[in-house]
View 1 (tube, one colour):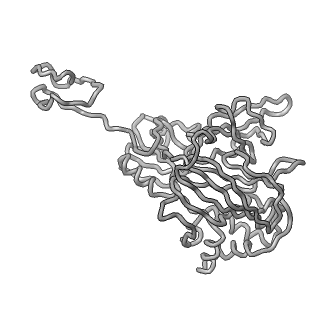
View 2 (view 1 turned 45 degrees about the vertical axis):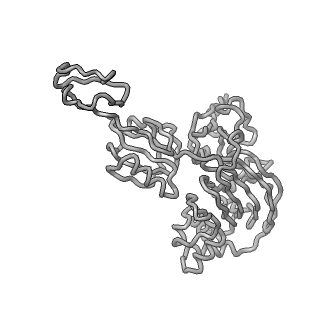
View 3 (view 1 turned 120 degrees about the vertical axis):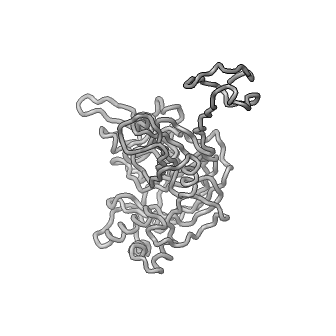
Length: 381
């Protein structure tokens, strides 16, 4: 209704009048007008960005049925690994089994290639503060040089512990300072592994046997945060390097360790996703290489200062090859060089965007004799 109109008997059963406002002041007696008022429920969720008809392929945590958006938000807020949730809609899509009111928690936010209308889903991604990451120490427990057959099982156990976090260690107590704040997924540290091993957890015992070893060798190490180089130097096994690295990030920051190899492609020595939204510190977070053929192990000390970052220095775009990503200075990485990036003809072999980013496009590089190759362009959500 509009303008406080008070005329009687103008509306017949079945009439439908669309309105551009939910303001009903001056119209407190709808029975005299022969109609009821229906107000569209808001799709806004406080603290989340709404992406209608978007979804995430994979990365599902848990699905809950018959939930309101606010209830779904609460579930995501209290799950350490949840960065977004998909909410069931009625778009008439034919894929998947999602119904209105379904709440699908997700550990990622990359909505590239996922048709939410076809899956009957909307996507909600957590909004984030602009925080400051300080990396204060880096310790090389084992350099990249492969894994001998006698420690292959122990190195695999270490990888499982790091990937599974506290759940893989029987819920070993966290040992870093948070001031009581919720910080998201707790990383595995040298101390939590030792505590879990002392508690009798077999996987942690195997992992600890790897951490107790003595190794020799040197890495030509490159450290990046969200694709931005923050350190490059030779590091010996058993060497600790004190640093004063400071990087602004929003929501999540990915610390990547890379061995620079002048004779071939660089090697991925692992990464650590840092959660923002609170001030806290972590000592000796473990970063193992993803492949046995590299087999490196590093410890990182870092701290997060909530709200202390500089918004002007946030990385908004990255270009990703098979082993590493590079921060871009221009929108959508237009004109970005790729000297250190290994391109590939199979898009799925390229590194995925970290949490807080989504795939914008695949940059195509045409080849004359062999198949065309690509790099992935990631943009901040």
